[in-house]
Structures are given as structure tokens and as C-alpha cells.
Amino acid sequence: MNGKATTTRTKLERGRGALGPALELVHTGRAPTRAVLTAELGVTRATAGAVAAELEALGLIHVDSRPGAAAGSQGRPSHRLSVDDDGPVALAAQVHADGYRAALVGLGGRIVATAPVHSTVTADPAHVLGEVVEAGAVLLRESGRRCVGAGLAVPSAVAEPEGTALNPMHIAWPAGAPVRDIFAERVRAAGIEGPAFTANDVNLAALAEHRHGAGRGAQHLLCVATGHRGVGGALVLDGRLHTGSSGLALEVGHLTVNPEGRPCSCGGRGCLDVEADPLAFLTAAGRTPGPEVSLLRQSYDLLHTEYADHAVRRATGELIDRLGLGLAGLVNILNPDRIILGGLHRELLEADPDRLRAVVADRSLWGRSGGVPILACTLDHNSLVGAGEMAWQPVLDDPLGALVR
Image 1 (cartoon, rainbow, N blue to C red):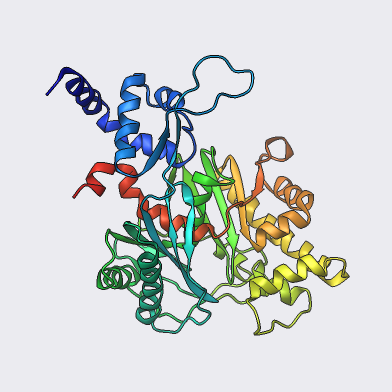
Image 2: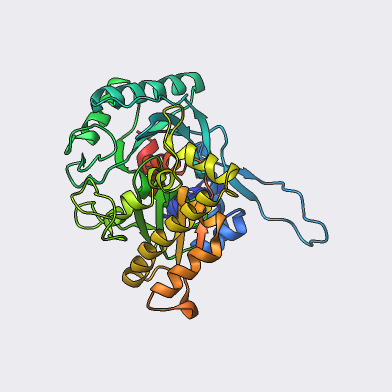
């Protein structure tokens, strides 16, 4: 072995422990160049170059050694780093009250391909998960990509360590269904490589937004969202989901915001879950939900096309006030540095941002002087992206260990 090869190997061995952190920096867009990567990792330029070259050899990133210089700049521009658009993918799946869908998600939170939505969720989780995995397997065969693993987002708290759907309230699955085991078995049966994971859909939406969307850069990120039914919440602390001692933290849908309100399936009354979701909005607006499209789509259409209608504006105000009351309570307890809202809540924020922010400020201990920023989620299909993030995590932790086997 010549001296140059020995030097290169020494640099790589020195930086091998930095492969995971380096990949995460490129994956989240925080290291667009080798110079930034060098500074973020705290290593020499040569070591950073060896690390980037190894990640490129694994088919994970692309290194552009001859980038064009910006107008007016001086000196040689740093090598540009980006995820490999033709690299491996994760299988991502999501089940919600109005259907289920599979997708392929690459590094950088990119959705590479999606399967058509299936609109009927039966009472048998094994049947539904078998269908969604098969849809994902078809996508993988068509793409010809390597699969690093699979992730599933479900509309339920997922108890740890069992991996059971504790309270799938808006789908007809039995409480305690072993969704993680079922999903993993279906993934193996389909011949799909890599580990399989399952988690709550809002948790995964928050993870995706923290890495690639409106939550990027937040240290204590609170996400609250309503999709097709119900209300969910999640908290990301220093880049990691806070799921509590058994995976059941942040069940914000069961905060009481109207003591005289609607009965909730949890046994309570006036919970955020039934006072600030699409069905509550349609009901408050005096609309009878139809079967043609999802409740979420009906709510979107009502807000966007009939907001001038007095009943719709009144319903919007009512839901904003209920949501704001719940958010204020969470701010008092959690003291987040940012709140992001998804689903119908994002649309309510955009309809009257001043009203929502005023309710939260008036009801929180910190008042207007310490108001927390409230932003809209920015990623399309963020729960699917989050399911992909979960499957990518072993690779982000240890690229060589996960891919070289």
C-alpha cells in the first residue's frame, strides 16, 4: 500500500465516528458545503473530505468538487454537498380515518414516489397493513431502489415497548392492536429489507417538520394538529421526540377546553379532540358532513370558498378560541420556543392569525411580552415524511453498520 492510500485511510479512520453526524447535517440541509461540514464537525478539512467521500461511496450523498463561484466572490468555492437523488429510500406508510397510503422517502425528507390513496380502512389491522405494505412493495419494485427500512404512522398513541395501538379512536381497530408486530411481519413477508417501525402520526409529523420544515432550528418545539379526525400533539426536545415513559406523552386531544361541550370517546366532555377537529368545525358552521370526500377536505373547502359566510366566520372564531385555550395551557406547562400547527389548525391560523395569537397570549402566564411564535406546518404529507425519518434513523446513527452487511 502506497503512502497516499495509507494517509487517506488514516483520515477516514479518524473521522469514521463522524459519518453519522455528517450524514445528518447534509440530510437536514445544515451542511451545504464541505467548509460548513468541517466547521460543524470540528475536524480538519482533510478529515471532512474523507468522511464526505465515504458517504458518497455508500450512495448517500453527492459531492460537487467543481461548484460555480457566486458572483463577486473570491477564492476557490468549497465543495458542495447534497443528498444523492438516486440513492436508497425508506418505505413510509400512513393510516388515518379516511384511508391509507404508501410512499418512498429519500434522504432530505424527499418523497420520491407515492401510491394511490386507499379510501376504506377496515376493522382488521392485519388486512389494512398488508395492503399498504404491498402498495409500498410495488413502488420499490418499480423504482429499483435499495430500501433501508420501513416506517408506519398511525392515528393512535403507540405504547412502548409493546408497539400496540392503545387508542385508535377514529378507526375501527381494537384497542391494543399489536400494530408494530403486524407491520413488521408484513414487511418481512413482502421481502422488504431493513427494520420496521411504528409510531403516532402527529409525533412523526413533528419530527419531519423539525428536520425539514417549519420547526427547523427550534430547541423546544410543540406541534399540534388535526387531520381527518381528532387532535394530536407532539414535543421535540433538542432534536428528539419526547414520548414519555411508555410512548404516551402529549395526548393533547384530551385537554378540556369546554366543560359543557361534546362527549368525547375517552369518557370526558369538551376535549380538544371533539371541539377543534374538522367534524366540530363543520358542525359549528351548520353544515352536514357528506360522504363524498374526507371531513378534512370538506373543512378546507368551506374555509377557502365560503369564509365570507357569517356562519363560517363564526365557526372559525369558535374553533380558534378553543384551540387557543388549549395551546395556552400547553405553553404554561411546556414553555416551548415555537409552536407549529398542522391540518385544519394550520388553516385556522392562516384565516385569523391575530385572533389565535391574542387568545394564547391572554391565557398564558407569560402574556404578550413572552409570546411564543406560532407558525404553520410547511411540509406536504409530513406524517409520511416522518415515517420515512423513523426508518432512516439507524442509517443516520451508523451509516456503515446499517448499510454494509
